[in-house]
Image (cartoon, rainbow, N blue to C red; front, side, top):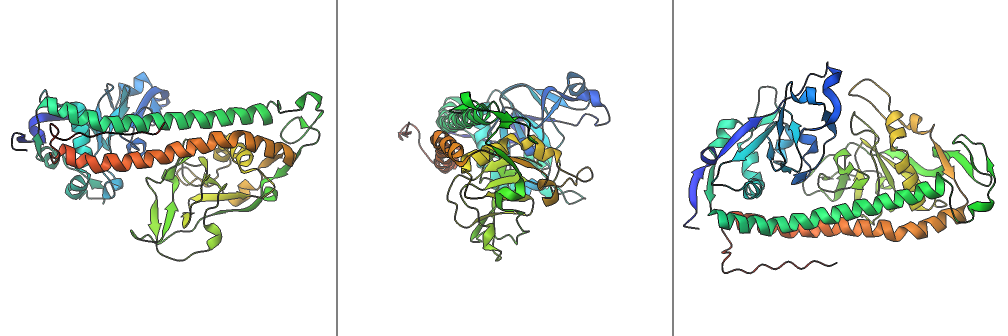
Length: 416
């Protein structure tokens, strides 16, 4: 647009660096303040982080930023594949691989965040390699990057259109989370508090899992599954026929394909995912033990060698079995063995796990009850994929001035 103002990022933004409080000072860690690193930058808005610091930690070695701050990744191998940009939804700190970007009065924060996201490909191109091989975006290159700015009122309109999509995505995500939490609460009610239909006349007995109804059983995990094994190390190819799930795809009990990759080599077809398969992250610190369940038909989809597939026997209702594994996420983490940074969830360790086995009729009754809840959660998350596709199509057109807003009426229709 001819009336948009041309300048550089250095003319209209300032940068702030983060840092890491000393890990040798335990009083700096496990507090209430979110501390963001690149692994937390999984979407345009960040509400919380894996790691937290205390007030003392925030005052020693890092920086605090308020809600509404843009954070960008400037160092890390992840820059070879994407350029994470997110906006904080609460006060938080961040590490040295991330910078905070603050616009001046000529530039709206929400518009700048979308503009930066639209520049992902170009930002990846200006990333070079530090001496040790890590990708980085140098400050001088970033600040010399050109930007064309529309008037602030037009910035507001553009950001408003795009934020409508992000609001829809966030609402669907929250609805899906609430539905899944509801299903887990029903599991606890039926199979931990034993308030299932007909429980009033139930007698109890001792078991490895504590007191359980007399007619119920407990088995070791290998006795309850068709397979429990990890995937293989794939040969990746951008246009490969098979989708590969990795550790980044498993978070908050959800299965996301945002970080999935593709493989071109052949492998054992038993590792193609089936509906009902439970997936468990099985290596590393911080991600080990995370659980999700595949509730869809996913042709040509598998996992890599860092993820274990647990496929229950047909006698188990998939919802009952999956939710039982969800309840054991802390146990999976505890079963990890090995040195710091090399922790593994081995097949031998999994073999020690006890699985509750109610009568098949109880499992099936439970499955019929929670299936609509969990299936709606999956539908909401898949609906988000369509919304993202529309948003990402509009994003560069809007921020680069390819759509004349005064003449273009953009409508968004959303199914309830």
